[in-house]
Structures are given as C-alpha cells and as structure tokens.
Picture 1 (cartoon, helix red, strand yellow):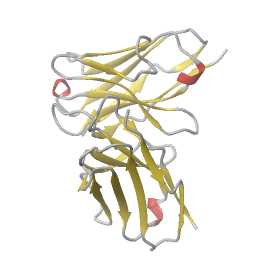
Picture 2 (cartoon, chains in turn blue, yellow):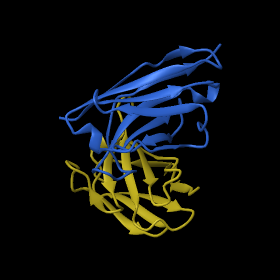
Picture 3 (cartoon, chains in turn cyan, green):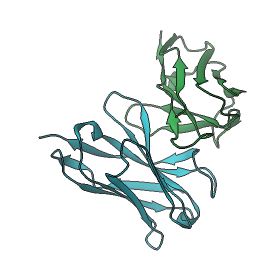
Picture 4 (cartoon, one colour):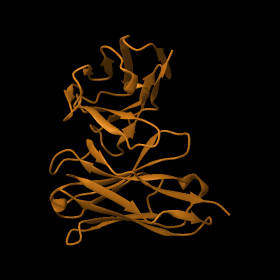
Length: 121
Length: 108
C-alpha cells in the first residue's frame, strides 16, 4: 500500500526557512517523479515543484523559483522541499504527490495528507 | 502558461441528479487533462486521467470526455459522498502544470 507522510511544517516569520520532508513507502520510490502541490487557505491547488526519479531533474513554478529547492534521497525513500525566504503568500498546506505511472509527470495518483506552513510575524 | 477555467463555480444538486462540470483550456492540450475530487480534511483524489480514463477504484458513475480545449466531468447520479470540490489539471504544456479554479458541488 502506497503511503506518503509529510512533516516539517510549522509557523515561521517572513524571510525564514523550513525543510519539508515526505517519507514514502509501498512502491519503488526511485522510479517515480515526485511533486509538491500546495493549497493556500480558502484557495485552489497550485503546483510547486517536481523532481524526476532517476536523474533528479527538477522543475519549479515561477512563484517559488530561486527560493525553494526540491530534492530526494532514493536510498531513504524520502522527498524534500527546502523553502527559503518565505513570504506570507507561501502560507499553505503542502502536499507530497506521487505520479500515476513510472517516468511520467503530471498525473497525480496518490497524495499525502499534507504539512502546514504558516508564514507570519 | 495554460489557464484552465472551470464552470460553474458552484453546482447545487440533489442526490440522484446528474452533474455536468466544465473545464476549458486557454489553448489546446490534447487529451492531457485530469480531474480530482477534494473533500475538506482529506487529500485530493484522482478521478479521471487523460480526459476519459477512470483511475483505479473510481465508480462508473464518474466519466470524463473532451479533447483540445473543452472537457467535461459527468457524475451520472450524484451520491451523498460526491459533494466536494472538483479540480481539473493539465499536463500537456507542462511547465507549469496548472489547475483550474475548482467547481464546488453542493447539496441543494
């Protein structure tokens, strides 16, 4: 059974940093593109970043480019999102998401329950 | 960036009625469209991928259609557990991947 368990969220001041983690199990982690999607309070879903399985190629939304870094440790079956220089508009529930099939990107078949990031002074 | 516009914003229905949700893309995306159901306190759930294929475990009352710029999600007979927000999402021109603004299906 696929499981994705996010952690690392919290309350942080503007300009601060956090490292989000997603522990994965129940599938061959290294074969799949993994993605972070977020939802701000009362708003819709927003794609944040993705990382390929094998070569670790990374892709970012313009809104986070240069501030967020997605990475993975295939030996630990763990996905990360380093979030720096946080702004109030980054306040959101951050979901870890697994793609539907191997080596494709953009069909989000399985979602974790999310970790909340709140940016406030 | 491809913009997805969903309509209506809110759909008020009684159980047993048919639901028709629309998603329009700002340019052609072929069939690379997915639909998700999102209930409060739960993660989104993939319903339909590549415009018309039901995801694993999704009931047959959910169906998707369309290609190019116009897509439809149909719930043939709405069940009480179907009241939720529904999002479309494209992966054709996938940088960036984009979602529609959502349609809320509420109890009439």
